[in-house]
Image (tube, rainbow, N blue to C red; front, side):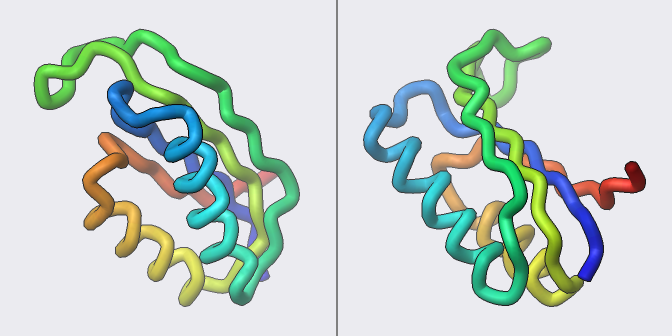
Length: 94
């Protein structure tokens, strides 16, 4: 297993309970073959530029250890999730 981190942005019109549900859903996907070492909901922030006519979003940062199969599945699900504006998974070298 390798160390990864993922940052994703959730639409600003999603309610707070649904934001927590999405975070738990993604952490559950990671836990199914990996382990979450740190999960941090940064909160609602202004975007650097407009994405799909949206100016704000809920930022979430997660550090985890997983196999490549788990990372590929997480990336696939984040791409088809309507509430996620952007996501980026990178390998943590530190």
